[in-house]
Length: 236
Image (cartoon, rainbow, N blue to C red; front, side, top):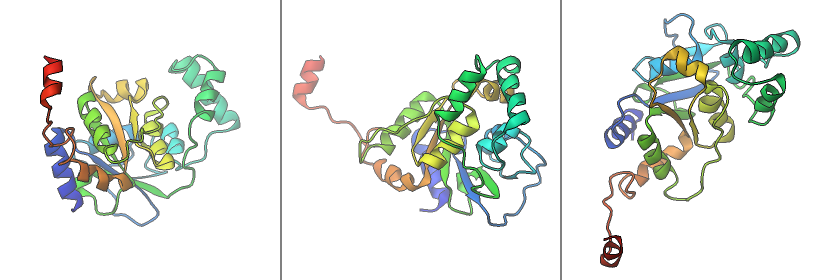
C-alpha cells in the first residue's frame, strides 16, 4: 500500500479532517521547500493542512524546537540560564529552575545530532519512508488509533505527556519507538492557535503495518461488534 493509499484509508476510516503528517529525520539532500524560516510547531500545524517543509538548523526559528529535535546542542551555561529565566519568569510554564530541570532530566533525551534535517509533509505526499506519523486529531480519533495500534499485542504504550510539543510529539516517539499521546504545551497551543479539541498522537512508522491490518478486525476500525444473547440480556 502506498503512502497515499495509507493516508486516504486512515482519513476515511477515522473521519480525519487534517492530514496525517509524515516526519522523517534524514541526512539526504531534499528539495528545499521555499517557506523561509519557521518554527517546528508552526510547521506541524501547516503540514496538517497540506503544506510540506524541510527544516534544518538554519530554517528553524525556535531555539527550543531546534535542540528538542536534535538540530542543535542542548543549551548550557549562559544560554541555559537565559532559558531558565524565560520559562520560569517569562512564559511562566514551570515554577522554578528545579522543576524545569526535572522536566528535562526525567524525560527521554533529545535526538542530538541525529540528522541534518527533518522532513514534514502530509503522509499522502511523502516520498521517503517516515520515521513517525503524527495525527492532529480529537480525543475519539486518538482513542481509535491507540486501540488499533495495540489490537494485536495488547501492550500499552509508555507515554510522555508533558514538556514541549516538539519533544512529546516528535523527539520522544523518535527516541523511544513508542506511540505517544500529547496535549502539547500551552505556549505552542496558544501561539499557534490550535483548536481546543486537538490532541497530538504520534505513531512510529514501523507500527503502521499492524495498525492498518487491524482496521477490518477491530471495532475501533471497521469491524462490527457482536453481542451474545446472554450479554445482551445482562445489559438490558
